[in-house]
Image (tube, rainbow, N blue to C red; front, top):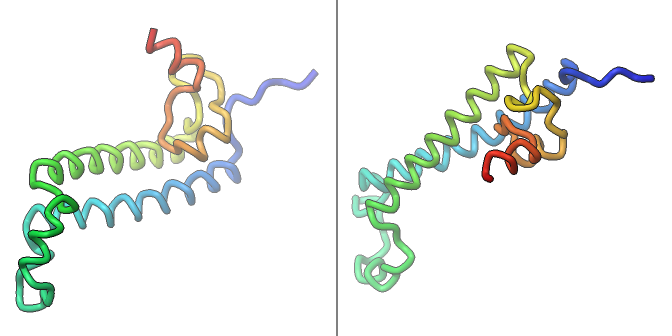
Length: 127
């Protein structure tokens, strides 16, 4: 009878570290773009060659400062969750459900690498 795994191996943790680092890099780039748009650092300077009237026509596609601010806050929260996941990898506690103490399935961690709850635990907290 095989004993149930209580943590992921170092090799498995390294795989998750790579996934998280890739997501972290992309999230940081997205956050920086949002911050630039909030600070108007991305347009209307001497390097901006698009005419202003075109921007007005495409107004529906441009984010308001309020929306960009909310997105930037959400993105920063996501970055913090990913950074916390890296700490859990260092502590070798990554992938352990904080409710059940069991391993979160790899498929879930690949999809949501900052997850701290298994699907079952998450479903029971919503009730």
